[in-house]
Image 1: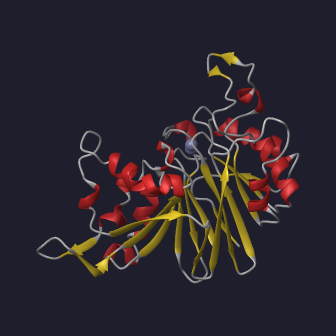
Image 2: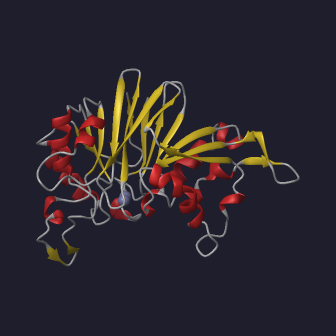
Image 3: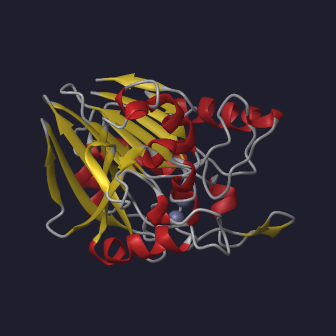
Length: 295
Ligand SMILES: [Zn+2]
Ligand SMILES: [Zn+2]
């Protein structure tokens, strides 16, 4: 399987010359399985660029199909969806019904408590107070599924979901195919008692790649901090790269990829932080937009 990062920023997009190397788009990760299934995690603004790439293939002609898993429905994980061009491509008959054989098809997944509201949430952000095009206008076939039993098979890939710690909840995912595995744990806060979340350890057990939320430095996370950048970020639902190292080591992960970079962290800052974290766990990379990993 092949993993590609299209958006690695947390909270809000940060375009500009100081974020060119790591990128400014919010969360979107593409997995292409060896049997060529398209699995997308989150629809932050990175999904807009992924969509343009997909148009070069069958999705450009209305012959594509894909699965989009949502970790949760905070803005930085849904805001790219209205700009995901493949969702607009499909043929309708004179009555406005979709012609199945000529429509792109997407299945959107969310946790049971999020999934039941996922359609309303995505529809809400396309309400005409916020956006000119209604969700019903999209010509692709879109369906919604709640992750109730938390285990799904897509072709040769097995996907397992677990709740992690984040305000209003978040799902972490483990994807396995042909003996290779990846865990995606973005938007997760580490326990304050020094333990490691058991659900995270289960998802990341012996994975080839652990993708982990390292938004804050320990100083920014500190509950005692208050300065020009605001109060400490404990309780905001995010973690640090150093907690990522602890989790990776405890779970036996072979490689650690830190993502959900803070909007305040420019390229130089992230490069320096990455170098420091590598002293503790050399197989660490900070995710950069466009980065790909073949497993
Ligand atoms: Zn987020
Ligand atoms: Zn969030």
